[in-house]
Image (cartoon, rainbow, N blue to C red):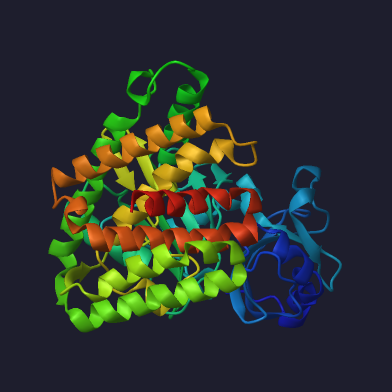
Length: 452
């Protein structure tokens, strides 16, 4: 391993407090960064020709939050990459975000293929997997918390922007599902890691896939464009897909239960869960006072959980919504098993009720239906039609789930509490990130209140 002297790399600490908050994967949106320290930095490879970029791997600490960077280092940043410039090093060279550089990223496959230890990172194919290098790389620009690179039509590498020590839940659950023969995930291909931290995870690329959110929202657009048709009459009706998606999620839950086990929890755990929901509501009301008018309904729903005798918990997806599913030619596939991005690592690995995933998906149908109306003047007809779409697809999803697992609607008290708990979280999130979208979760809470 060739290591660039850390003081030279540390000079980026003057530029990173400005650059980091502008990245879509930066966690603390809206918060200034006071100090950045470079924990470690190493060269993965030097430029082969004069003027060719070197590739640098770095872990940095920004006010206590750890981030992973892949940096191109070059004497002059090419024009097409200048928007990715991070800053200048002490030796006069420039550093830029290398994930935007297709040619530089293409070389990562060679590291996997040779099981390299370049940069103090182990590049490890999964057992029995042979990596084929030489494929053109391209970044995917839609992610919020990580950065993924696609190689040809074969592989996709997710670079964890906020790596934490320990084993990766994302990797472990994918391995468990693949080992169980599940077709509802993309096969694991390789990991990049240090001794104590998983830094990246490669899987088979599903080139024929369409994102669930894009497919669902296209259906909503079709409905809103047709003034006289109901959701079931529009050519882009999504209910059949929602039904199949429900069955796919139930299959994943069943496979995880078989592979990793389940456990019963009793009244004490139900009481503790209700306390956690109340605590999240306390914090959200302080942040968004508009929630206060809904407190009686929310408190009653959470208190109802206290009276439940118990439930069964297991490993689940943990952050399920329409952006975490792909529709392929052979069916639905689930992606990104990291868990809730804002939750502490210890929280993400907790066993939970499968109804948490169901509630997340039901909330996502609401978002798909109503996001096109965010910021508009209220229009009763459009709101009614969007709500009809959401109700139709929520029902279809539960119907599909019930073909494989228990009907989630039979556990109405717990499902209702989980949905409202998710809506409370959404109110806070939207208040901080997309204020125009705050009415979406507030409308969901109002509908529950009106339904009694």
